Length: 195
Image (cartoon, rainbow, N blue to C red):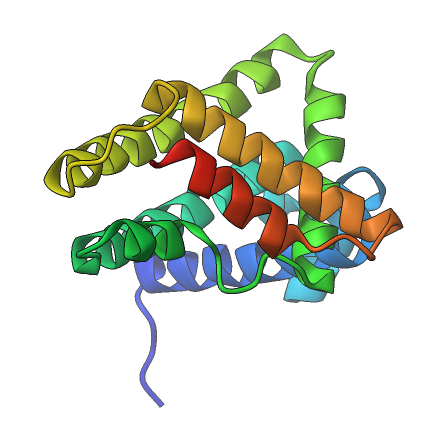
């Protein structure tokens, strides 16, 4: 058995805590999740969560940052492959706009937004992560809209905010009113935005 270096052990702990945090946030929501529960699910003490992330909020931000990087990579690849307007719209439509996991994650995200609105320090961090993601998506859409000769109906900065808010709103609505068809709604909005 190979012995891990200190850096490798820290990375492994970090990754285990991220995985456990995601599972606990999905299972319990952000507000009900506790640092103790996250640490126990990962097989560590709560001190590990504080050491690696500074607490529950820091762990959430790390998860959102990781998800944003993954989303940007996937979107960059899909948009680069698009050769028509319809392919660009398809690239902007997630394969799964519904589903229990997406709805639970959106509910947890809404809890974070509500909880951090009263905490200026955390709210600033959440806003910074969101702004970096929005800026990157806007740049990708600008590049590929120009390449395909498309003229969005809204300034792209506004379109990105609209699409993000719509996605969260539709996923949240699914938690209480699952009869709606989020993919169809999103498709109509994208069809209107990208002429």
